[in-house]
Image (cartoon, rainbow, N blue to C red; front, side, top):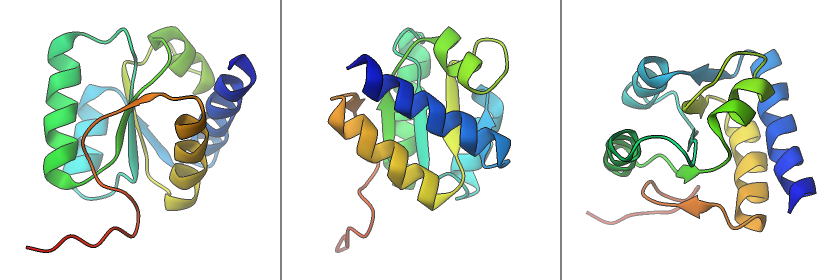
Length: 120
């Protein structure tokens, strides 16, 4: 479990160095609403209000959202202070992180899967 979690955090760090993340509530929300976000991660310890807002928004915009890690872990992975939410802006990084998150059984709610075709 710990090894998988470190892999997720390492991938977040790499994505940040590559300039492919947006973090903080405002930037994450903006990335989702402008269809730039490929995956959203919200800290487990984020407030219920924050979790509900991102769950609803990501479901509406069909962006996968996961609840994973602590604010401190997410912030540290990005080389910043505590972060309650972040968005991965690159599909490749998002796919790699999602694969690890599925393996760690992180809680996924809302959004859609890659390549999933939804009928109207």
